[in-house]
Image 1 (tube, rainbow, N blue to C red):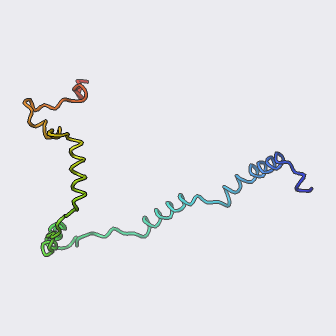
Image 2 (image 1 turned 120 degrees about the horizontal axis):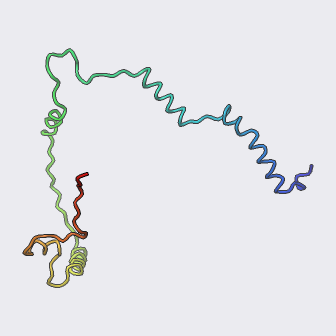
Image 3 (image 1 turned 60 degrees about the vertical axis):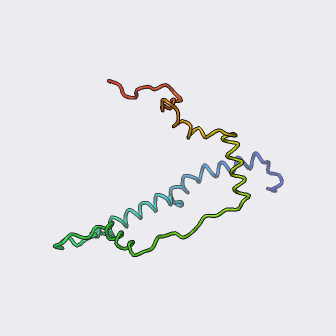
Length: 136
């Protein structure tokens, strides 16, 4: 049969028939679920060949040192002082000041600062307060 004589519908039908015929066999005998296989092999390795190693000698007469104390003692010798001075150019400072003026407005202060100067010191809730506990 000449390949040019095969219609696309017939070719699709033949492909689907071959797929339906051989796919169960391939899935059962040829392919492998690599994720399940890897999990099975790792579980097998962990259960058969690894042993629990204690962090301290169980037969020692003294308790082992606390790991946090050991870390603190080792860090006491290190110098963590920072001698870096943060600097910026004038253009960045002007840009930040102009942005803050736009947020605050001329002569006004931020709402987060103004709320502490108010008399009642109660922040209004955006929703009515509802008790979350019930007697049920």
